[in-house]
Image 1 (cartoon, rainbow, N blue to C red):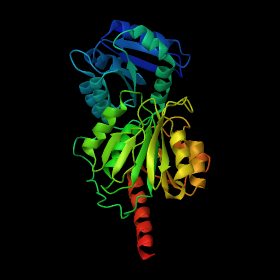
Image 2 (image 1 turned 60 degrees about the horizontal axis):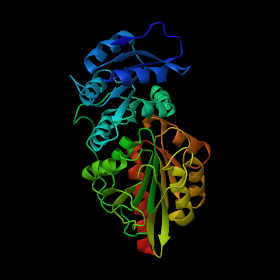
Image 3 (image 1 turned 30 degrees about the vertical axis):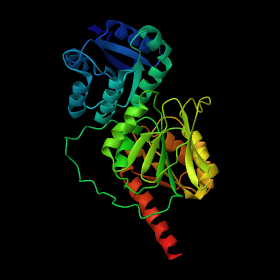
Image 4 (image 1 turned 90 degrees about the vertical axis):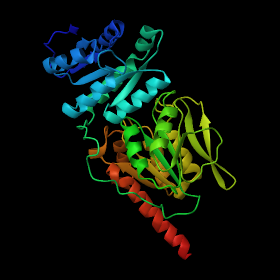
Length: 363
């Protein structure tokens, strides 16, 4: 166990590092301490030691390894978010199991995650230093909520039908930090006959397939990682693969997906900007554009174009966002028709779709 000098200058974010690897603890501490606005107040080799250090040091943010001895990171996170919720950044391995466990951690309340390679750990972590400290800063400002006991809360009101039988409508969704859980909550409300849905969630390669499979097992619609050139079907959601841009195009009367390896946009690949701009270009008034929780401004300018093309645009409200960044930027640019709590977004989309279906029937 390593404990830093408790005399932390005011205004610095206090970070506690929890990892069973002494090398990782040392590297992470050095990365944190290299920043003027944060400091590593301690480093623990396992959650049992960390529990005492949390009490003694009162950190602002934890970085937590997924797999550790004595008590794994998931079990510790589950207990922590029930008893003392606080911002947690998971440190995950780039493996299929690492992806599955990391998604479970996000479900339990972790703000975000960074990845570490199985080999070349020093080079990998040092190469990701700017990403790590950016995510620590975001985590320090994120809204963290106490995890409710399983089964608690009001029962979910299911939307049984979309009320729209055509194929020309599309739903386009952008999200980042906090988005994996926001998407899960929103898509659980989608009925089986919903319009085709395209999603760009900022996530690295190797995680989006596991994320899509997880959503597919929970939702009434089919959810998959997008492939290039496939027809967009009602009742299906397509998630941009990590490290590839997703856009929509027309092929005759159908919409099809397009993937590209073009350079990052707004520092992101996949980028929400790319998806929304393609929607403005070839879907227009038949699109619903939805901006969910996330840091930064990716997609905000393209959402202006989407609204100007006739699409109906919605942003998640500040109170229900983990990070009110991307929605705030879109609202500030005048890109948003409605600002709604997360739990009301699906209902409003399908209310409007139902009204559109009624008008089409009368015509």
